[in-house]
Image 1 (tube, rainbow, N blue to C red):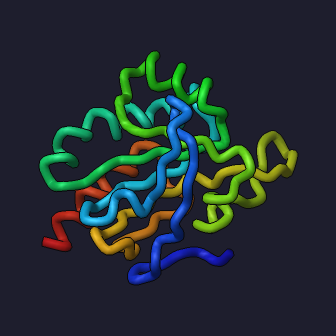
Image 2 (image 1 turned 30 degrees about the vertical axis):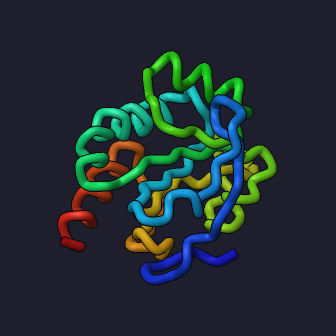
Length: 156
């Protein structure tokens, strides 16, 4: 799928969280959602990104924004990541990259000269009706929260 842009309908999904509970994006209708995709739990960039989201969680909640992280990691690994860093928000498991494909974040990457397929770190701010407010592809781990906060201030 191509990249999503402002005004697009956010693709719905149903994935298991770190407790192996099924979570649907449609279950968040009526609330804004910061949805972010990260390549792999416990890697330096993903830890920085997830901890920055954790640190902004209360401020996001005050603004009516729920937070959801998605990676290909299995629920057990997501639970370990959550417990180690006290994240306390849904970390969804997308091992078959169905949600990643739907959001246009599964693609070719390069590391040490080798090409492989994986998650392209991205984040999405979704409105109460399930429409994309903003989409950030190839986002820096440290920019997920500032990008979302800036967009939230602009939508007021």
